[in-house]
Image 1 (tube, helix red, strand yellow):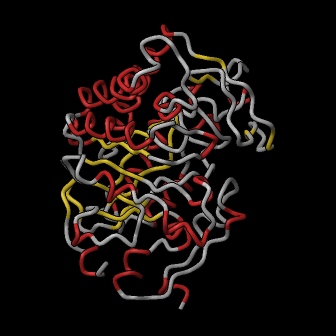
Image 2: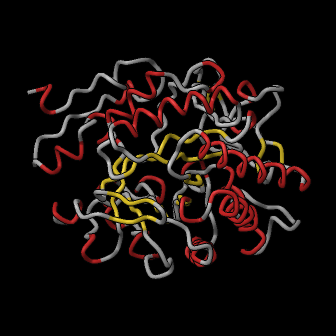
Length: 363
């Protein structure tokens, strides 16, 4: 992939991007009390405003949607006001930022839920990753409670209202978290969805929850300010499907009908699909596999893709943006990249969050 291709402008629905370097949604667990963003969060995002587009960390659509301690929400007036400080800071540096809205489903813990009840899921099937408590303690995952059919429209409505709240907080758009074993993906895949009602069984039924949310959010804020994130073939959290290619071909074709601003595909880690690091390059390339299925802009985290070959329209960078707030300038100037400190990824304060230096500061 040539450097020049990353610096051509790109239109994603209503958004005009000056470059094709996207900041991925990154869980950092540094929101303030009650899921309210703080000035420190505003500083962090503003430092990275030269990205063509910033996608915020996953943000809970309701009190029951939280999956981690220190993750933000978008369902109270205080949270909306806190996020307004963030978006104002990014826009002051001529950046663009959209919010990823999310519900963690079974990948949560009872201590994070207002009434102390166990997490919910499409079916009462436990995941294979530990949970984090409100006090950042790692514990065994709890067996989730299967949602009643009557509860599902309420959650769909939570997503719609969260999208409206995000726009009210000054975000330029919204991304739906349908990947990484969150609640939406738990409904999609038959390894986590064994329901026998209208939300389980066939491809159409298992996709219903996602597509109902997409319809409601598109109608509320406009499809041209709305993107969806998926992780075909991913098995994070023990999620899996018996026919993933068939499933995601169906889902992506259906999403294409909504004329979204973009589709964001992430690649499965080699370890998730039974490959060693040496064999990771043999994993399915989702952007290549599904490019022809989606009629719209495609974002990919596979940086080796050539934009010129039209496998993707923009490249999404994650960890590199953690350690390199000026990643865009470093790529453009062919400057060395700083390494991130994994021990500071989750929780904490300034260290490992806003204290990484730009290339000029470090020189």
